Amino acid sequence: MPFEALREIVSSIFPVNDLVGAFLVINLCACLVVTIFRKWKSSNQTARTSTPDLEKPTSKSSTREKVTRKFGEWTPSAFKRPTAPPYPDWDVHTSKSIPYRPFRYGPKYFVTMGLRSMKWDEWIELDNHYLKYHADKKKRLKERGEKCCRTAPEAMDGAIELLEELCTYLPERYPSMFQKTPTGITNTVTNETFNIVQRPLPEDPMATAARLVQDDLALMFERPDGEYYLLAGAILLAGFWRLSDKFGMPLSEIHTSGDVPQFREKLERGMVNFFRRLKPEEPVLRNNYFIQVDDSLAWSPSIGSEDSETVSWNTAAKNKAIEHHYFRSERQSLRRLPRSGAVVFTIRTYFEPITEIVKESYVPGRLASAIRSWGDDVSRYKGKEKYEEVLLEYLDQKHEEQIKAGLEVDKEDEVRRYPL
Image (cartoon, rainbow, N blue to C red; front, side, top):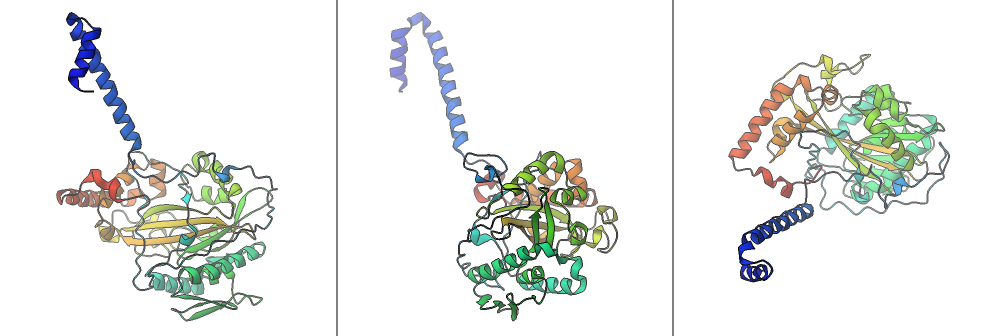
């Protein structure tokens, strides 16, 4: 409203001598209007992007529907995975990996499952590191056998179902490398052909599945006690944990035996409920990250020999030179197989030198803030004391260099979206 019109209205209500008081009232009203506007504007702006929280109930969340089936029982579902469109212009030699950077600014580090919905065509991600991963897996299968790849008899149908799913999905999504055959699948890059219909199969179906993708693979099965057990796995490039330690364990024990921070307090109940209610048509994703102080993708020797009785950060050297620091990130997908009811974990590891990722805008400052936000329990779990002095000094230095070069810190939300 124009000021003169406002003054006329006020003059008609208040005597001249009371105009000072009237304008005080107007000023208070104006301040109130400005405050309301600012709050409205703030609520409509995009906040720092976070993972959609699938762990919280919503009216539309079918994962919150009551499950009436008995524990350990599964009726095959008629669900069929949607056909995956070919990955645009994908090439095994030139298609780069997606730069996942799933860390957040402090000051507080939140322990959550961190689930988000997955699009079906994004189930398996392959890139120009495929041939290295393939060679590493082939070597690991030969050298370590059942220590890192195994299927329990009761899990065989689920493992075969997973292999069949991959043999259907991969030729759809990556037709330049995979071709479906009457008996299975052919990898035209490695010149391998796999027969998945003969019985008995030439090898453990989890081993064949592992040869096809860059991911590690794990299958969890519900038993009559309501727990989900790790009964099939090809854990070849895990870095910090061994299938032989976890095979046959229920989900809760897998996490407590690994000293996962705040599992009992923050994660266990939600995780149990999520697994119980997960439907074949509702796949999800999550990401995590670690710092590693050696350059071995398959197994980190810094925490001890892979064949030692116990492994821990206690054996790692402290504050090694920055060129020995690596950023290890996992992209995990979870889905339920419709026929067997098994829950599939695909665990894709991305492994990069810290000296490379700090070249990306905002990464040094955000990673330093994230590491400083870890509580004591998370710090112990991630081995922080072994690298914090060297790493944080380096990250701070690179962050300052970016700011001096013109980085606009307050613009980060405009150029990134979690978990990138």
